[in-house]
Length: 534
Image (cartoon, rainbow, N blue to C red; front, side):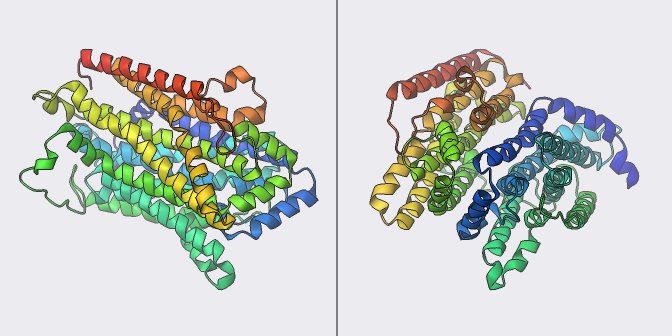
């Protein structure tokens, strides 16, 4: 079996690195940089131990904050920075899992793995190469993060503990994705299984942290996310939880190899259910096909944003109380989004972050066109009476309506939760919902960039993710780093009206919509004229 694991793995590693030469460095750098501003900003916002202790008291007294971010283990600058970075564990785990599935199950589904299998490549070499690439990328995230945190003046031990906890979370879910890739013969199903598992361990961690005083704390120890938070960076570090993570990685990896040995290339352990022999009347159009392909993502993003909105709305009152402790924080959040009222400032900033997140969904919906093209499923359809623009329009509808549905779900849930806590649902819900929906013109700009690249430079379509990463860094770190206004203005999310509470300026919204339309028109024009390309 060792021969099947290692034969050809080196060549596949080079192939995967070449395929990911754009997107892999982007997510490694972005995930490593995101937590770096937290330490210096917390030191500036809460310069005294007394102020930090009051802030910790606010966190500890709010169950919704414990569910969303997890527990805080100290009032030092580093401990608060580690608490604020807890969501990064989810981001690293998700990026790792999706990368493993792309290089295993997606390649099999497209038929590329079968071609490689006809050469001198071992049966398990693809899984080996995918895991090595992702494990190395996760380790790079952790070490870069640790080096950056040490550079900001935080203690070396805590910085290393935080960085390694990020890497370990990525390793666990990379191995879990390797198992999911063996169970199903569809990449979409494997992604759904992994994302569901990630949501489950997050929920176990949240319930365990909230219910710790009621005897529910043991649930946290069923979650790899909970293990990594119990490393307690900058608060008398505990190194033994890493043994739990490494044990889970070993068990999951061994399981993935054993399952891989029991199936043929292209097949899954769990057989798929056969569909009907003939399509129904409602499944005979490009739009119906797009609905079939895109509906899972639409449901998932909408449900996820609704849950996230409930959490954000639930902590809004406590967040406003925390803002009152630090005038500097009010100033920074107003730069990120918001202009009047503490709760309004909080919601304007958080809705801007949600808009950046949902832009990933918009790009994903657009790039489904490229996936269908490269995997050979578009050509048979376009050989019929279905025109290119008609086929593309079905998917583009989801790039437009999908983000709107997700933001609406998040805005409604956040407005309802905050309205109930404030005792005025009728006033707060529409205000928060408006703050969510006003983000849409900015969301459509990255989608337009993705469509432009798909139509004119299809081989560089992955650069749309790099553009989104640049917008993310400008929006989240630009103001904290004191970048000039012209640099901040490069991001469309800088030009969104600061709602709720601010004044609405329609010209920026109109210009962004016109820019998105121009990018889309250029992309569709290129798609209509160019040849199909692998």
